[in-house]
Image 1 (cartoon, each protein chain N blue to C red):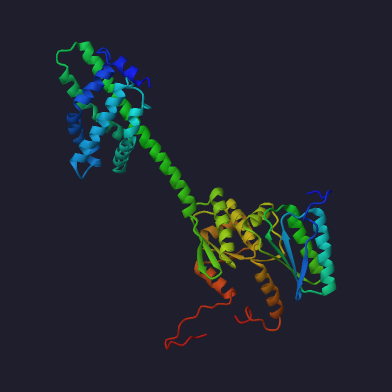
Image 2 (cartoon, rainbow over the protein chains, first blue to last red; image 1 turned 180 degrees about the vertical axis):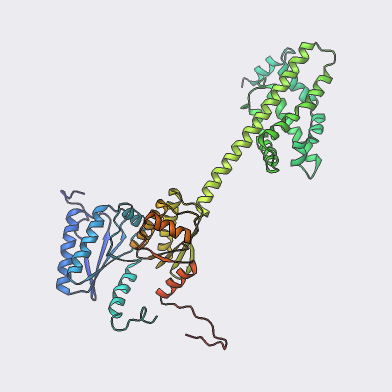
Length: 138
Length: 302
């Protein structure tokens, strides 16, 4: 994936802030330059707005390679250093199969079925601390 | 077409093929009646004898047409295309009753005897050579019929096997929705790589479709687990996790547990439960639901 010439529409990935969560929606191909810029943007946004979590929605990603797997793992590692949790949401079956075949099982990365589930996961982790509703009820 | 020409050329009395064809047309009724009593026709048309006679007529017509073309030894003759379906039906019916292909073939051959008798009876004062030429043509014709029957029956069988193989792939891997957000795949039979792939794909698809937070892989029906199957299980579990759901493996039998330990396979990252019921209970609890016994008074006990 070289990035020598500009591609239409491949400028940058928007990073949205929703409450204390950052929402990043990846769509289509991710190129080297975009990925580096995205990692920077996310790290900067976490520091600026002091969010507690990052949700990366990859339901629009149809094709995956080892590069995207590494980018996701790196974003998660950066966020962890900045005390934010990362959740990858909406991975397609074909993408999951490919990542597993490539041997990239991404341990330590949290996953959710959809963006909604990811927000719920992040919210519940916060709420769970003072006598949370689910696990402690059991 | 050149068919008229060939027919005219073969109408000379020296050609035994066309003579057999003419004989078949003349004796159509008698032959059909006698064939209807043969086991091959009798077992297929059990309801009405008329139907058997009618089917016999059709076959006689087809044979007469083939003989008229003068191509008694050609199984690809267009005359046979008409009767192919009927013949395969008869052969299939015989095969269903447990007959071996060679027995079916013998039964087809039995049709030759009445035809032979009729033909010889029709030529009382012909020269021995002429009689021999005619019976030979008839024998070759019936041999070709036999070949056509067997060919049709066998290709029919192959098509059936292909269809069933596909069905087996689909049917053997149903994904069951056990509860809101819980899907399960009961695996039955030996897992090979093709089936593993289908299982994995259908499970992942249903996780998306049903928005399932838990996927249960039940391997109660899997007789043996080797390193390949274990690797496949690990892959499925990892893929399900990547999609944001949790995978539970249930139904590992004691012998299989021993094998897994013996092989030194590490299923440490996989959640396992003894039975499908346990796995369902685990998933329900994690979803925040609980299973309680109804109290005798009707009130819900906690």
